[in-house]
Amino acid sequence: MAYSKGLHELGDGCYAYLQPDGGWGWSNAGLIVGDGVSLLVDTLFDLRLTGDMLDSMSFAIAGAPISTLVNTHANGDHCYGNQLVRGAEIIASEAAAHEMTDVPPSMLAALNSAPGELGELFRGFFGAFDFDGIEHTLPTRTFEGRLDIEIGGRVIELIEVGPAHTAGDVIAYVPDSKTVYTGDILFIGGTPIVWAGPLTNWINACDLMLGMDIETVVPGHGPLTNKSGIVQVRDYLTFVQDEATARFHAGMDAWDAARDIALNRFDGWGESGRISVNVDTVYRSLDPTHQSPNVIEQFKQMALLETHY
Image (tube, rainbow, N blue to C red; front, side, top):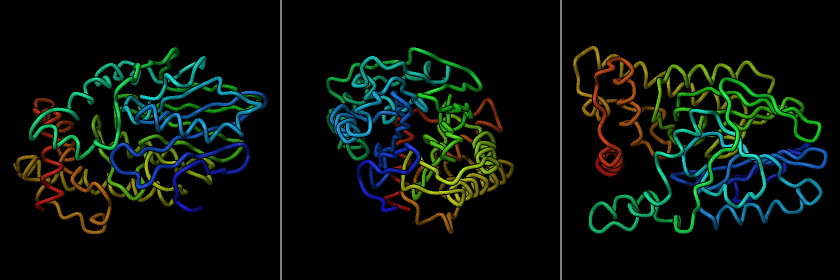
């Protein structure tokens, strides 16, 4: 299926909404249509984008309005549009719901409009998005571990696999269509970023999906894939875990280690500078006393790696 912006029908009442190129903020979402009601997997980074997405779904939900919204995790590009899904029950993991309060839309709006070098840095990542007018709409129902829900006669399995990308990542599995919506447990064509970790949790999440009966995989960013895409992400995470661990035991500083690792076959992936965050997360998992840079410094490091190395 072509990787183009908009709603794509997957069959069996399942849809994917894709946003090329899948880089910073350009996330995917999903729609599962049941008998008389539907479930939406994630909203988008701002109100305009989310509104356009919902408009594109109008024909599919005409007789099956969205009764349930699942946020796969706390990052704003998967939940900042929640306010537009009026009247829906909003479900997330307990950890994700707690983490959503950490980065309100007003914070990103302030960073985007900041003067000087700081504003220039963040506009380089998020300048395409408008964070004004967003009413941060939080989940109304939370769970831990696993939650099976019925939507119009269809069972959707919500499985918590975090902390990994964030504190409370969830995947949504639709057994009757052999489809899984992964949130940011999968970046396809782009580099995964491990904000929370440990990487072993994320690798285990990939192994879990590889053991499931699935044919269609809707990633949080990038084009549709199948189990081969899961393998690619697993291989990257295993590579970073091994390379960073070796440098940690050799006494190398985390930032030096990130600059030292040759990405080899992963070098062509977008957002390659995320290796700095990923290495730092490995160091933090190996040494609980390790102090990570603050978020602004982490973005500076990523930008530096992609422009100078």
